[in-house]
Image (cartoon, rainbow, N blue to C red; front, side, top):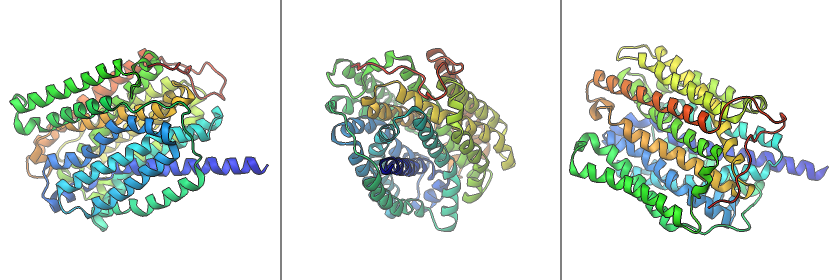
Amino acid sequence: MVYVFARGFSQRGTLAVVCVGVGMLMLDIAVVNTALPSVARDLGAGLSGLQWVVDAYTLPLATLVLTAGVLADRLGRRRVFVAGLALFTAASLACALAPGIVLLDCARAVQGAGGALMFATALALLADAFREPRERAGALAAYGAAVGASFAIAPLLGGALTSWLGWRTIFLLNVPIGIAAVAATLRWARESRDPEPRRVDWRGQVTLTSGLFLLVLGLMRGNSDGWTSPVIVAELAAGVMGLASFVAVEQRASAPMLPLGLFRHRAFAGAQLAAFAISASFFALFFYSTLYLQEVLGLSAVKAGLAYLPGAVAMFVVSAAGARLAARVSAGTLVVAGLVCASAGMAALLVVGTDSSWALFLPGSVMALIGTGLFNPAVSALLLGAVSPRQTGLASGSGIAFRQAGLAIGIAAFGAFVPAGAAVGHGSPDAYVTGLHHAFAVGAAVAALGAVGVAVLIGVGAVRRPAARVVHVQPVAELS
């Protein structure tokens, strides 16, 4: 009896610290959006500097999370999670104290590195704490709700803090929460590791980081330098070559950071496609839609945040119901439905204009956020179910890598449609809205294509197993 109580307490504690930690990460991806106009005015930043406030954070998340997963499997998942929390907390303090945009971007990059350590171990800690399928379903639903709700309420929280206390408080808030989370993790979370861990793939790390960085850099600078300029062409070509080199390295490596053989499993490949598609579309457009609310419609930071609140509530409710939905329909069905809703929501946002009421923004944003509520717990279940138990760190890391790569590339690519001056209030509102419409149309297409791809790879339909089972795919054998 005592053992059962202690185990349940430890499970709830682990779930709590994972949700708090990942919630902080998601907040810091999106919370800065409503603060960006204030950051631009205070630090004298243009659109490129503001884009790097987000991408300097997401790029380390995308490129380091796979290596972080290997380190977690080797050194201990709780230990690496705590290290990530500590680094993230220290970097948050540095962000709050940054005197200029360059130092802010650098501190954000360190934040992203700490976030990679945390993200790589989050699902692995949950998988170790919740081993029964029914319990794991509930934990994943709570995890998905924390991820989705944190991203959705971030604009409101960021707006309120920016309007009332200044943009630096959005980073200061992480400091006491991070310290408390470190203590709670050491108290409640159980240590786990892979008894036969892989080696760190340094060649893969270098090629992935350089390739993704150069690709994002070229996309971000294309408008200002000209898409046909030698520098931009060279950066984009080098980025593509770097990513191709990463694939070649992984094919030959004896211990690859991302075993390409896993993509022979359709559920694993479909989950990665889905993660990339939703991040490169709807989540990337958060950056530009929030600027639209403030710089075009003239809303204050807190009012811009309030515009997302109805969708945030709807998404939280849908995510929390994920466990019951997973008992009736397959994870693939939920992922496809989520992408379709997100695509429809972005298409509905094409009606907004330079003189629209903010209420016209609500239907599309609510629909898209409902889609993410369906999507988040289901894609987590697919990832965990597509690998063997000893590969949970790899599954968690790969999913986050594809999410953050999609976000970084999406933010950089959508900047090609939006005039830089208009984005920070110095250009034509009509030009900004026209560019935003193009971005919404492309985002809707990306999400729709992702839904089609997932449907082909995984399929849709009802669960073919007893309701107690949450994982709807067979584990992958150890592939390299």
